[in-house]
Length: 107
Figure 1 (tube, helix red, strand yellow):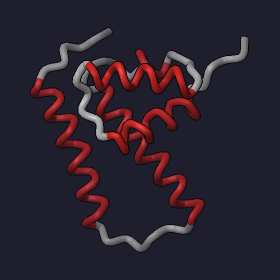
Figure 2 (cartoon, rainbow, N blue to C red; figure 1 turned 120 degrees about the horizontal axis):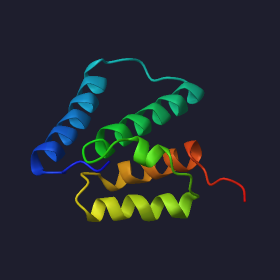
Figure 3 (cartoon, rainbow, N blue to C red; figure 1 turned 180 degrees about the vertical axis):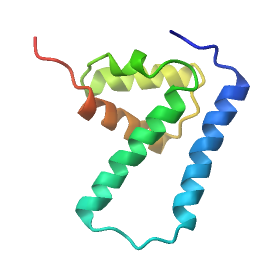
């Protein structure tokens, strides 16, 4: 189901991402070891995906699909073209998260 994606929902999604980033910086936690850092990067990518994508449609619309890296790249670029508020850095993280979590199924 596609939700109507207006300026208000985009603003709310963007504000949530910014608030989460600000909270993480304000916590002053010590840097994590490399393995934990990779896990936190995955968590951050998942959170960005959930916040940004749920601003316009149900997450199941994306999570029910299985694509390779090129397929997810095309999808995310198309969503950005529709107005999804994603930085280039987050776009890459989201694409990598989706490709790793929802890969193309074998024929």
